[in-house]
Length: 157
Figure (tube, one colour):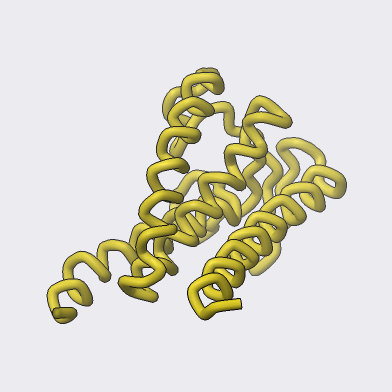
């Protein structure tokens, strides 16, 4: 097996593991916390709150699940294309796209299976929408992409 094939396999395995973790936490939340119930996890910092989000971030486009599913398919395809091509270019870019792809697919699975996304993490120190692990992957992936575009890519020949 050549080096490139091993890298592709390891990266796709990583995406699978990240998606599995997201789905596992959503299943555990759904089975152990009633819808709307809030449990303090770290006082004044983080609570676990089981909510359903039929929209995108901040419940934008609520109840437009089919449209969001279609958009997710298109965006995931684009991310996967660049993800596949980036493996030979930069580890930063590959990692950013890996996180973004895993987050998009994690929430896509929810929309297909449940017709909404399961969210559970609520910040107590700031008024911020309840989010999930897939959302975290997306945010961190975008941050890594920004760092790559404005810092790392400028340094690389």
